[in-house]
Length: 399
Image (cartoon, rainbow, N blue to C red; front, side):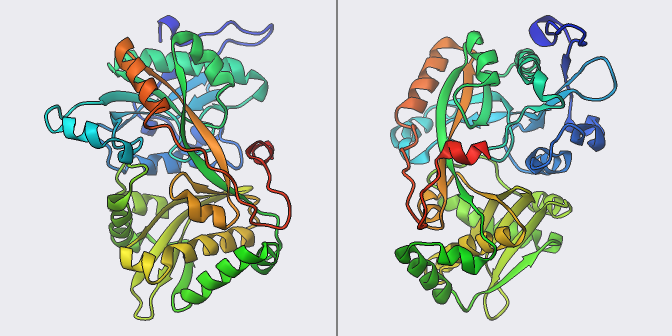
C-alpha cells in the first residue's frame, strides 16, 4: 500500500500501524478477524458480515480494510463495501417525487458508485481496534487507506455509516479531507433492567400498559415461537420481508435473499421470532441478533392483513422485548424505521450520523444540501412510557 494510505507516525516505542485493503472478507481467516471484535459487537463478526454479502445490492462487493503493526495479528479492521448507491431510494423515498419523475429521462440521476465503511446495523462503531489507546491513530490509518482504495476502485462517493456522534476519531480524520457530517434516520433503543416481562409491564404508565394489554389480547390467537434454527424457513422469510420492503416509505436499500436468511441461520448469535396463525401459517417474523449487553432487531416481515387486522407487527415488538429480558439483554436496538410504535414499547430515539464525500465538488454540495434539506430526518421526541424518567440518548450510549 502506498501514498496517503497507510502509515502513521508511531508513539515512542510503538510500531507503526500499516493499513491495507483486502480483495474480499473471504481472504482472511474468520478467527483472525474476530480476534479484534470485542464482546457485544456481533454485527461486526466475520460470519454476520459474510452473510450480509448474500444480500442483493447493485454492484455489491466486499472491500474491508485491515491494519497491523508488523506482526501476523490484526491491530485494527473495518468492514467496507463497494456498491451502486441510489441516493433517492435509500435516503427518503417520500421526499423524491419530483426527482423520481426526472429519473424517467435520466435513469442514473443521483446514483453513485460508493465505497462504504460501516456495519449493516445501526449503533455499531465499524472501527475495530485491539488497543483502545490507539483508536485515534487506528481510525486515521483505516480511513486513509479506505480513501486510497475508493480512488483505486473509481468510487464517486465515500460514506462512513451509522455514527452516534458528529464528532470523534472518524470525523477528526476525515473532516480535513473534505468530508461532511450529515444526519441520517435515528435508531430506537429500549433500556431494559427488568427481571421479567411482567415487571416491564408493571413499570409502564397506565396508558401504555393498557396499550400493551390491548395489543396482546387482540393478537392472542397468534402462536409465538422463538427458534435458533430456521434455515428451512429461508424462502418464507424472504417472501414476507419483501412485502414490507415493497411498502417501505422511509428507507430502502439492499434486498434480502433466501441465501441471506440461510447464512444467518447458521450463526450462534441469531434467532427468529415467528407468529403463527391457528392453521400453522406464518403471519409475521422478526430476525434477532443478540450479543449481551445488546440485542438488535434486524428485520421483519408480514403481509398487510397480518399487520392491520391481526396486529402481528405490534405483537412482535412486545415479544422481542420479552425475549430480550429473558436473555438478560440491557439495551435493545429496534432499528431505524417505523419509529412511532417502537416509542410505545419504551424506545428512546438515538440520533445517527454519516460522514460523506463525493469526488465531484458540485455533486458533493448537492448531496449535502439534499441530506440537510428535503431528506433531513424529522426530530423524534421520546415518550414517557415508564413511571421513571426517560434516559437521554447520551445516557444510553454511555452504558
